[in-house]
Image 1 (cartoon, rainbow, N blue to C red):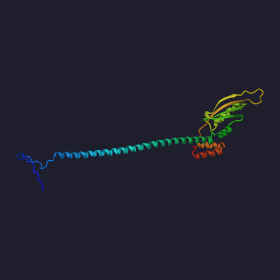
Image 2 (image 1 turned 60 degrees about the horizontal axis):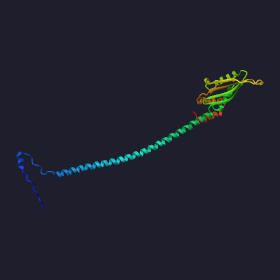
Image 3 (image 1 turned 180 degrees about the horizontal axis):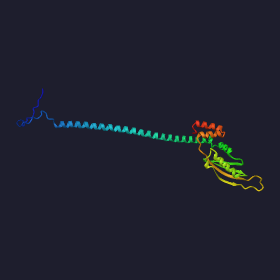
Image 4 (image 1 turned 120 degrees about the vertical axis):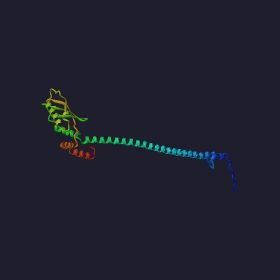
Length: 233
């Protein structure tokens, strides 16, 4: 059995009809229902905001973790780069040292080559007593005997200027003096001298030709071998 509830009397119905005012809707939504619906909508929005905030927080933690990992990797890479740079510097130093040693072994500045050139250019009556290489300069000490000792020294200086091993303008006589002769000595008097000659930088082909010209065939072959190994230009 269905119980029907009667609608409360509308006392102003006749008056509204007289004035032409439309009738009230059949059902008026109660205030409680509006509040409940608003609460549902507001709660849904709040849950959505909380969910978005939670997602962003988790995402932030993931990004921070990834940044920490990348920072650690970057630090490792920097350490490795420093090690590689240090090793590269060591290799470069060793390579440069090997090149210098190779130049000293087979270059025209090597002892045997210098001696051979001096042997061919030292005039008669001149004796070389000391040979020393200081940097890029050859230092000579020796004696020239009379007669014409100074002329003999001058010939040696001119010969060194003609040598392809030295810079002509740099060959200088720095000192020359006559040694005191003992009264009873029958030996001719001598003049001691000191001379310097700066080396010249020769291209590889010219250096090779000079080695062969001086008869240093073995050194020339070693020169070619070291060139092949990349130790000489």
